[in-house]
Each structure stands twice: as structure tokens, then as C-alpha cells.
Amino acid sequence: MCGGHHAHEANLFDSAGVQPSTKGEIEPCDLSVRAATQFDGRFVHLRMILKRLDDLIYNGMKESCTQLQGVSSRSDCMLACYQEGDRFQKHIDNTANDGRRLTCLVYLNNPDSSSSSSSSSSSVSSLANMGGALRLHQCGEDKQQTIDLLPKGGRLVMFWSDQIQHEVLEQLKNERIAITVWYFDFGERMRAVMKASSENKQDIGGGDVQESSSQREAQAFVEQLLEGNSAVSDTKRLSTLHRTAQALTPVALCILARVFFGKTVQATDGNGGGGGGGGGGGVTPETIRASLIGLELNQYLELRKQAREMHAGRK
Image (tube, rainbow, N blue to C red):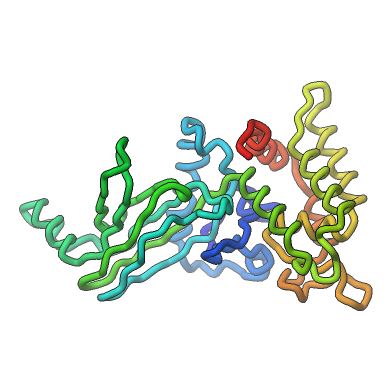
């Protein structure tokens, strides 16, 4: 489910952009589904939570935290409801360099009824008796500490997706309800998708993603997107980028579809036309071309800013 993102909703090149498939099947916001779905007023509070979370990350923490400088997009939120006896084993979210940088979890449990009692300690004790705590491993400067965080309604938990081992302890009674989202590092995500594309010939159906010319063409487009030259205005650079997008081959567009939209797109459908039967949800190479040509200046500048670290040695 999607709560909205910090970029313009009407443009296909959305800030949710691209999250490559991972071992846990964390997928991006499906823009084709969102475009075909009319918002009917449901999940209003969920949307508010996610928009506030986006504001905290993009307009607050990102400016002061070096490790978040490359963050430019997030996943849909995952809603999890743990019943009595449920638990989740110890793991690290990102062990494959899939781009996930920050894990954010918000508890949606009803406030503990004991919180209004005369003793706050009794409230904590009551909550602990329900189980379902999030246990973080290898914490502290010595990496030897274990921290248990109780699922208190309204609590926000954040940790590094590629560093922190964590588990959910057994739910002893009642329910544990939480949403989880992942914020993605632009450079790492791009490298992950490009690598996946180069290793899988079948991702684009009839096209061969290992075809060197198309691979170089897609890579050149990415490099052109990220470059910065003070001698040339941003508007002129964007105009050049639009012209480059006009000339891209279908196979190169299929590669870029994975990079920017998390889409598997067929170069052809076997009948001479663009195909969507390979999992692209009706998206064709020409759809991707139109989206790249329609890239606006503010979106171009944001992507270039987030990608600077890609050239700073984090490879």
C-alpha cells in the first residue's frame, strides 16, 4: 500500500521510482496500479503517517546524517499483524546490497489501557507481558549490547537496513500491528538493478540485456543524468538529456525501466509491438521513453544531487 511520496504525484517519474526486487520481495510502488486506482478516501491516517515520515527523512535527517545523503526513494509500506504465538527470526534486511539503507517501523497498536494508570512502570510491565518486542542485536559502541523495544502504539523505530540484526520476539497475547518502510540509497539501488539486468538475459523478454551496445547506451544515459558541469546550465543539460532519451533503443529503454521504475519490460511482444506481458503491467519501452522525456527540472536536480555519492567512491 502506498501513502504517497514527496515528488509530484502526476508524473510517472515518481520519487518511489525504483526499488529492485530483493530476497524478501520488497517491491516498488507500482505506478501503473496507482495510476488506474482512484483514491476513495480510505487509509487517510496511513497516508498522513507516511507523509510525515517522508518529511522527517527528506527534510530533516537527510541534511544532517551522512549515511542518508544518497536516499532518494522509499518502498511501499508493509503492514504486519502478529497474533499469539507469532514471531520473526533474527535477520538483517539488506544483505545483498539491494539499495535499502534505512528501515523505519511504526507501531499501530492501540495505546495500552494501563498507560492511564497511576504508575507508568505498571504500564510498561503490562506491555512487556504481551510480548512481540523488537530485539536489536550488536548494538552500542562495543557491538555487544542487545536492546528490546516494546511495541508501544505510536512508537517509531529506525535502524540501518544493512547493519542491524533484529528479530521479533514471540507475541504472547493480543496483537502486534506495525507498518514498515525502507528508504533506498540511489547509487546502491542503481548499481543493484544494473547488475541484475546484466546478469539476466530473460528480464526483457526478446531482448538480450547483455548486448554490449545497449548496456553501454543505458549506462551512458545514467552517467549523463548524473553529470554536473558548471559551464552548462541545468536547463540545457536537461534538454540534452531529453534528446538522448529520444534516440534510445528499445533494449536500452528496457534496462532503464529496471533502473528507474523497477519494471520488467519486453523489448517486443513477438508481433512487432511493444509488450507488457513480461511483468511490466502494460508498460512498454515507449512508455519509459515518454517518462524520461517528460522529466522535469526539479526532479532532474534532485536525482543528480542524490547520485553525487555514487561518484564519491561508494561502489
